[in-house]
Image (cartoon, rainbow, N blue to C red; front, top):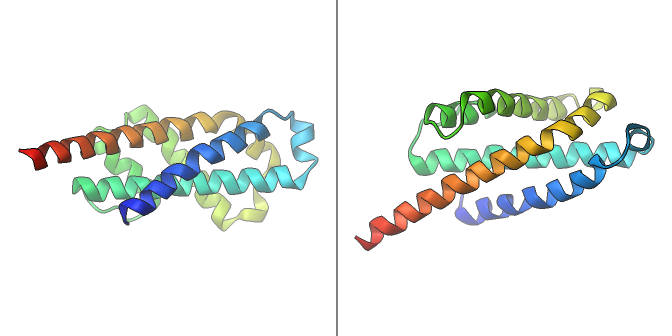
Length: 149
């Protein structure tokens, strides 16, 4: 993946979070009464989580770590390299498993469960996004310093 691709994925996440926050502000009855709320939530969660997976894979490649075989392994590898805490690792893997479920079982996602995820998981997306930004910035800073030396 090219750096420009990563940059576009980095831009998707804050935009999605902003839209998800609008959906999050609705009460459950209002949320479930309009299919557009459900579809938008599913799409924005899925694209945010997929972007995080892609960014995590890019970071792993840049750092020369083991190539992940499946999506959740991105988190496992970064946790083994101590970029992600064990507590956060479990939450992020659960988030990725949700994304996999949405992709493969789109029609069977329970609206009440989706609403709960919307209420609880946005912060996990935000935290992992910030972690990835910090890793990228630290790596780029280190790389620039090495080039000057």
